[in-house]
Image (cartoon, rainbow, N blue to C red; front, top):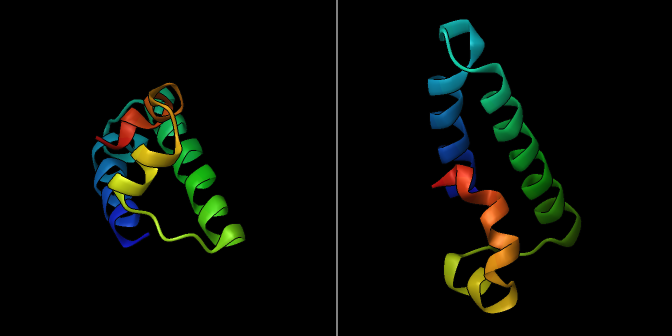
Length: 68
């Protein structure tokens, strides 16, 4: 979760509307972050990239490309 939070903060600094960022992109970032955070919190699942790739098809992962 720490990696996700770190990346979220980095993207928020870049795309937040207070710094002239894109509102739609910030909404996408917030939505992706919220989904990931709720999933991790509710299921107490430890994420790492290798485990995600094993468990989920590439079709699912493409929805979270915003974190790359």
